[in-house]
Image 1 (cartoon, rainbow, N blue to C red):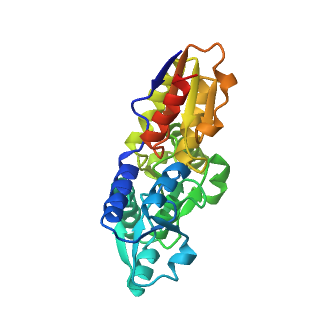
Image 2 (tube, one colour; image 1 turned 180 degrees about the horizontal axis):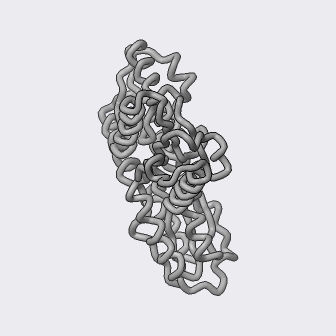
Length: 291
């Protein structure tokens, strides 16, 4: 049985950067708190916990004083930084640079369009850490939509600036943008692009993985997709594999493997989310190779 790892799978730059920053602080002997799990992967969180990283909730964060807290790649709203300043908390900044740039773009758009005259619409997952940080840039006055079922939240007679959470599906984003254009036409506009500004804010590392994973999934008899259950990116990329190859299976660890999946299979592909550590993917590879 031939077993192959997708070379593009594993941590994206933003997550890899956050983990390196955490490791550097921990190896210096510092006590470091992470505001929320540093990455949506329990196995990696457990590894960093063994080095001393302590994950805390926002409620616990508000009780802390005189310590160091790491802001993970997802980013945080401005109120988090204000609370840290008030309580003498040193922030270890590990927000993904792409997310940081998106936060600035949303804030600048809101200010330049006179704070409300243009609607800021964000395509993303409710309660996702990145989305909370994005909405916080404009005092939670943006409009969050998860798909075309939420179009009723938008006023199609007013200008719209559309943004996306960085880890969403490009195809779903394009579908949403086209549905908004059609709604604008229905409300009497002859040129919907005068009313709608679509900002391309999905991370290139995420969007480029979709077509690559389609090819990868189609070239193997079975796909083992490795990801944390809480990973938004993992759920999305797994569906990409599943659509192309029905013999795709989602596992969070080696314990989820079912040996019956591999009966009669000759080519096994192993891949993962942008939040999946390479060491975990390689661990799954080694176990499958010994079947």
